[in-house]
Image (tube, rainbow, N blue to C red; front, side, top):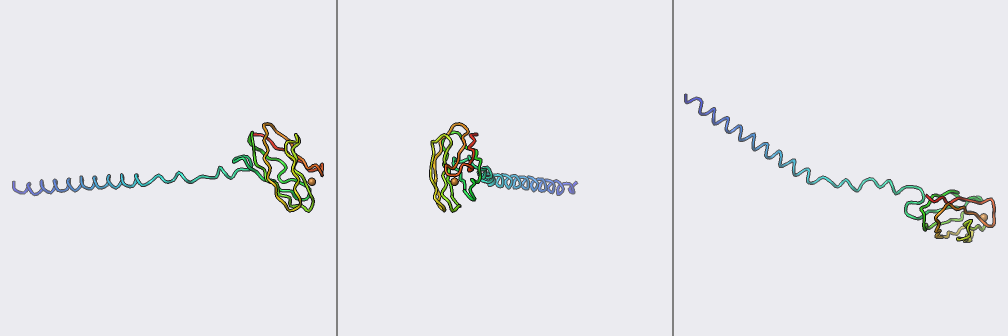
Length: 136
Ligand SMILES: [Cu+2]
């Protein structure tokens, strides 16, 4: 009969050890979940879009052509930077006449266009140079 007592103690010690293990396990789990959650700063790929996003865009002029010759902008005002990489004087002129700027060779000009509907642009010196501003 005395043989059973140590066994009982052993079971008690074992179960106590199990409880302690379970406790420390759940403690570890709680600690690790608390330190996660800084993954929100990834994923800024949306800002690499073409033109309209932030209300600014740029156009370069080379070989008597605008590049790009089509831009999509948001309704309202957009800053457009035009770089003249040609050796000739060009203009950036909206078809409605609200913007008309001369850009000497090698120079850069920034204009603010304020449009609510799709509008063409052109160079007043070279009628073949045209482009389109599409309002999204
Ligand atoms: Cu021109």
